[in-house]
Amino acid sequence: MTPHASSPKQTELQQNVHAAGQWLRKHGPSWRAFVIAALLLILFDLGVRWLAHEEMQRDDFHIAWRSSALVEEYLEALGAYDGPWLAMIGDSTLQPLPQLPRSATVPYFVQEQLREATRNHRWKAANLGLTGAHTIDMLSVARLLPQNTRFVIITLNYKFLGPHGMRPLHLYPELAVRASQVAPLPQQQALPLRQRLKQAPKQLVNDCWFLLRNGDWLADRVFGDRPGNWLRRRLDEVALPGASTARDDLHRRWTPEYAAQMRIAMQVGELSLQNPTVRNLGKTLAYLKARNIAFVVYFTPLDWAHMNQYRVGNRKTVLINVERIGAQIENHGGIFLNLIEIGQPDWFFDMDHLTEKGRRELAQLLVNDIRWRVLLERRERP
Image (cartoon, rainbow, N blue to C red; front, side):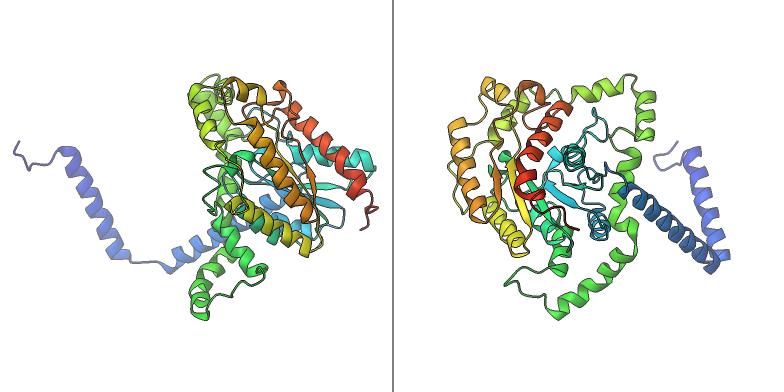
């Protein structure tokens, strides 16, 4: 065979491609096929919208992993809700974990305990936990809160004050864009007309095409590593017997590599108000105060037993910084809860993600501390 000779398989493939090209040239584009495809896409988009609507009626609603999918739709649904509700804004410490029941989240436990404490089963706690969210992303979420928002609980993760927090990046830029259109910040200049016209077609498509905005949610519900995602579970069982145990092992995190990563994340010196994370927190609190929305801010507990064992973080510096931020929160008229040291060893999967027991206990602390001060003082007025 010469160097340029084709193998039988290559020849067969070339013939198939040639035949397909001839068929396309003969038949040409079909407007009927285009219309049918468009109708099928519209029907699929409408079907997914219905599924999302059903998802948002659940008490254990959560946002898709590493995305902002359904945030806008969820807040729109809450804006039409005629019962009392509060928003919990934070990072992945509010989200479900693979080895826990879907409903085992801090917002869900807060909701259940509020219902019991107030004897009002219409209370909702909105779970707005975004994986890796920094305070700049929390500001975007705050600006999207509907008019009937009464109360907000913000969870801060201390590790985001460190080297990562010094880069004020939008992890969720789509929320920032939407927030700037819905509720511009004071002194924020409107976009030039030319730029707005340039963005208009893309914005129109995003508004009309649900899947384009929320495809991450659909993928997460079907394939995501979450309890209840039956397809992913079945695939794991076929590909890797005992996969659920393997996933649990991923959260036994205190390896030398994990400890080294946490040491870097916790390298926070004495905080300055010029720290981008602190500045953006101040903007968020000022915005909530301007809208007359009551708020509580707490630091998520840390696993000090393992942190001391692996020499992660300087406890004295951490406590100084936490108190400094607490003073800023109270100066903005909020309630600050210093919960960073309250956790027990069996509360934690890793440095900052809580077990079901830890989440339940944290929720109880939150409800006990805030219900008389704010929620019940308002007499749950509609």
